[in-house]
Image (cartoon, rainbow, N blue to C red; front, side, top):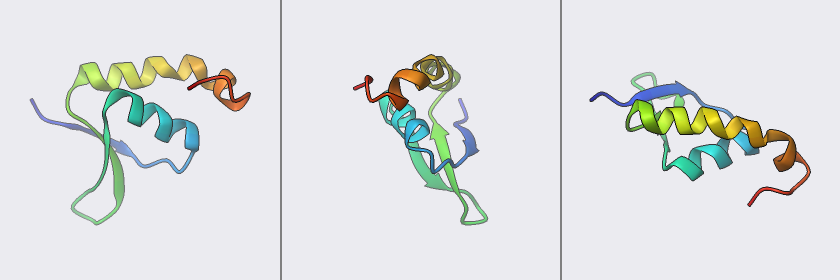
Length: 62
């Protein structure tokens, strides 16, 4: 299976979600940073964590 790359985000919440699902920050062929997921399941978990955004902003997510 091919990895899934999405645009890099400097948002701390997005980086927290990436770390929670085991994703990585890598660089594409143009030397631009991207978020990389090993598979769709990992990416779907990243998307699902978006429901915690408000709690994260209130510092209630660990």
